[in-house]
Length: 276
Image (cartoon, rainbow, N blue to C red):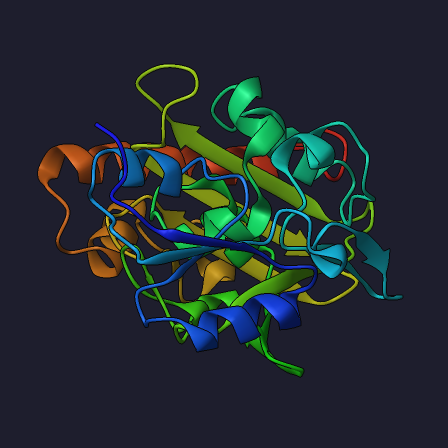
């Protein structure tokens, strides 16, 4: 199948994209790499009356060092993160994650903001960047607001974005080599979306410990009392059941295993900053 008829406009900046979206119907959509929206258009699961192309928006195609964080423009691709074309706010963790997203053809086109806006609960950036405490910078015309990713997702494939707002970029705090990190996901085959995932962050310099349960058919969950979990004072089966009571027995077992693997990687005696 092919998409239904739609209007097309290209934006030179996130502010211009927001202005264009405000001028057309509420069902208009921004598009960059089109790796999620494109198939939905072809299958007619999405039928926007207009598309606003942000793939060449100048402020969304760059990354910049902001001192304690790196700002990634929303149209930065997975491949650019994988290849080191933009700085990594972490000791190589983002590049390692990007390398395992789908296939190279997808990574060449797919963008960091596109993944977050699509809000698939199993997507890598949805889970990884939430675990890292990232924030999205949302543009509406010349005004911007910053939203923590843990507050950005309102449900599966749903976010807080208004129809005329654009994710201009993502701000990720820098993590030093003293921090420990792990990300584990179970996939049926290489390139698939995760069936279960978990992430662990231990950053002594920032006095921060975070454990995330992902790919749970809804937005990822940051688990309560992460230190107790790491120290084995809470049953992983109880933790997963409390965080995601809707899961089937089979899915719960897989998520418990993902959480156990992530914890083992983050607490191993290997080099700080290691992970998978």
